[in-house]
Image (spheres, rainbow, N blue to C red):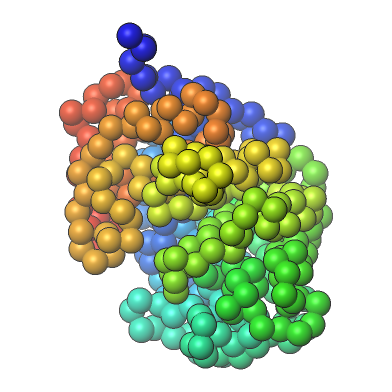
Length: 373
């Protein structure tokens, strides 16, 4: 009989450049909207500290916005610029480090996406072509000056993260937000050097953001880039439909300075190219690692029965076994696994998995989205 699967593979150390983690579990970045006027307070600091105390290997913050006039689409999203906001984030990272944790901010710009609450920024929304999605105009197309200023703002935020003592930084290039809107042919209709028919051409903006960020933080500071095929505007959208297209997409980004690709799927166990390696084939993170040689993070409905987008419609989820995850981790398909809702609703989730106390795992209650548990 085969040996039973154990979670040992989740609790191996991981080292990359200046980063050493005690295990392979990452707290996925999840928008929380608890930062009035863009400033994270003591409640936010305690929220992250609780996860550090409970053995999360690496914490990635909720999306934090760069210094652009309309870089967020909800009023409670925190800034990663300005004296007050950066002081708040200094308290966050100091608390995480005091608890023995490691953390990086996720830095983003929401582009032409609309928030769920109906809140709108006072400034004009900006994006590659003034589109939220196919045939869905919102805001204005960015000028080359806007693009240059945005690239500089990403780099400035990353430099501030390094100065504050964060262990890594993540750029958000997924889910239909600004960087992703440059990748996506449906929202990038530009005819200048930031557009084009090929994915390699449309990746230029992201590559320049990465290169500027790398220059700002230096060669040894770990840089993560989050990517997805699916968009909140279109769950079935695909940026790369073949491995060759994925190479065209990812290799220039690695060359520009990405150390880790954080590959977002709605369900981590789904194969990326089943027509090539079958229904049990490599997922997005597996293919990204195979094609680029870079470290990868996988993510998508880990540890829960329900798919995470359904949570926003009020759907609860129950804990499920981790055999499929452990099998892929033992095969070294990817290097790290990000866990979202399970950790959002249960700060002790990692500790319970480590000790085998699975009977005490909590179901996910959508009500937890309205509070900092």
